[in-house]
Length: 323
Image 1: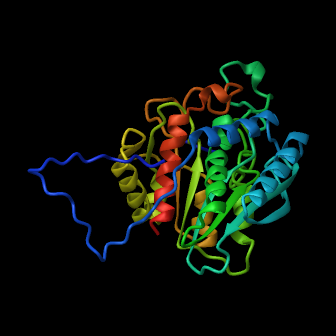
Image 2 (image 1 turned 45 degrees about the vertical axis):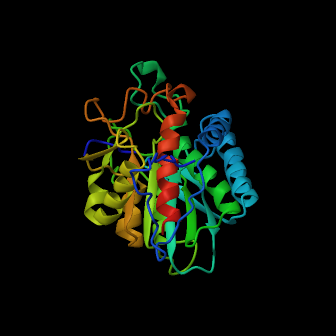
């Protein structure tokens, strides 16, 4: 990805005899939000990583696709595998599969939740030049977002939300041209989301809004308000960040603007016309904005933190179930 700069916490109220107890308005709707299990999400990340780098056209890629489809089916989703041959910047034809899991099919009000599940074929930002042609394991860059969505899918299968949910796992996101490539590299990233946005799994598909997860597992991750998201869907951004703040996750969801990042949400906005935001780790103090292990051989499980997964997953559970 050309990512350049551009459980619920229950709060116990102790009241004394001098403090009146809170009386709930009889018209106030009580929303019960299921808990998010970060241990479970972590295991879903680990399972993907155990296949190895999920580079298109590889055995690991095929095995992981089968696992993701089977998992969503086991969690009660209606699953569609959208297969397409997509040409990469270097002419390689990528046998890609976008994996879609849907809940509450009859609901006209739908929420799109998405992440990419493939991993990068080269470690082009590794400090060791000898690692350039080695694939990225993609524990954070890819698997973390999918892990959060799989745990949410498991919960959806037991507690169906009031709205329709479409989980879309995009393929061929991270096969973009490296910085030293000479030639036409425009739109070389996010091939799976470009294809889905132009050819949705359901004719005429639309959603109230979409939320993309990318690199949401690093320790002490910081999620700034990404500028493409703010341009297309500022109300969605502000709602998500407000919910996160109310849940006590302000140290992750930073109430400041970040850079504009070319990611899957760009094409969901531009081509599909669905207002979609990106929750993505951004570090304004790092060279590339994404941490030292981004697009290197070091994007491994050591960089996955359950506390971060919990903050992201709990926030999204509240967003969905309060619709």
